Image (tube, rainbow, N blue to C red; front, side):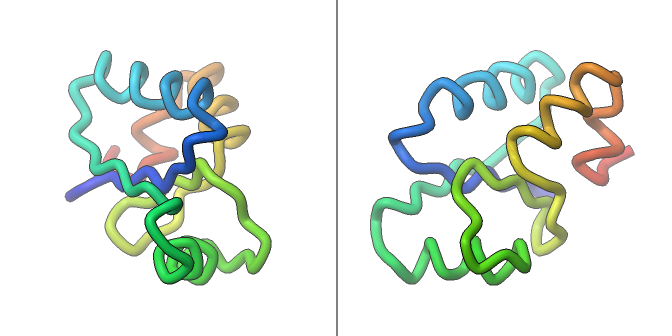
Length: 87
């Protein structure tokens, strides 16, 4: 399975935090930069079911996991693997 992190440069600190935590848990991920074009942004919004979603948004393949705030809550609760649907 491949965790996907949809991202835009303006949210670098949130992105860096998510990447740091994934790396600390040896979880492989793919970073998808939505600034490359509107099709990628539209895909992120479509997959998340939110037409106004802003990055970072986190997916496991095509399964929507959540946004940065939800990820952050999972980190605090020590439920990152469940959040990422890999547990």
